[in-house]
Length: 147
Image (tube, rainbow, N blue to C red; front, side):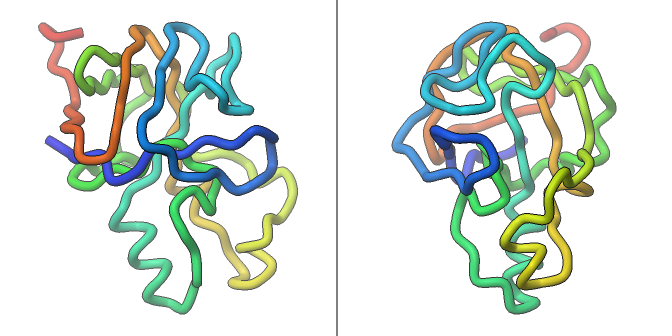
């Protein structure tokens, strides 16, 4: 079982995301108002709170959404979830579609720190069922019966 530490969106691709009070997740689309929403396999990105904290401990001065992540999660080992794993948060059902990604252009964080954690530690999902998500919500990995 995990906990949602932040929900973030951005209006433009390639920019840092901004923390929002709650995210409205739309089935087969993504988060309302987020630049990455659409009919594709990377509608919502997740990053581990602990991975971000480790990166900060090495001197990175970053805030929530700095890596372009939509959801920051504590308590789930995200990068070891196989593709097709489902995550549930209230009414929201997400399906893991990709682990990591190629860094298409070195972001500001890479330029400062010499590395970025999103390409190796981020996971991507699509929205199978929508709903509202906010900081503090419980998020769980589904068992076969739940999905």
